[in-house]
Image 1 (cartoon, rainbow, N blue to C red):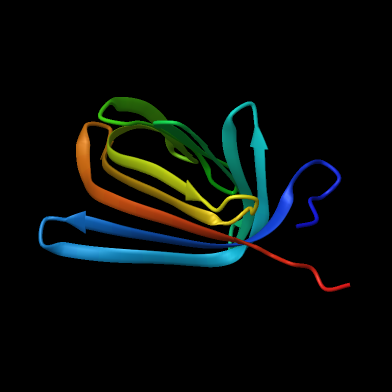
Image 2 (spheres, helix red, strand yellow):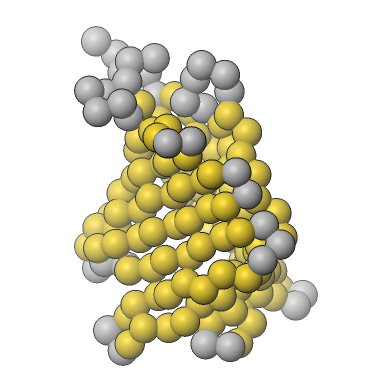
Length: 149
């Protein structure tokens, strides 16, 4: 592994989110590249997505039984996770900011030893402004991206 000068390692990322709402199921997938970093006992994954409205910068932080997803740019969102607890978050739109509440059922991270490769697994119920959006199962697979010289 050749970490970047700032301690970050290049990774390939595959994010899958399955949304269950009653009998319906929706799936969202995204594949791209980003960086992995460990700092102060926490693991971070950073990446950018391009959408029609612009660039979204995303940071995923996992530390023990806590997690956080921060998105900025074209989308501004903050989702906090604490195993078996409810946590407040927010989603900003041009029409105002919506209160989001996560109720985390499962939060885990498996990482390969000596390699910035692994899996983050989060299962949570999501409520927006007091209304249940459904149950979300997000997995983030990340694998060391070797750069050819």
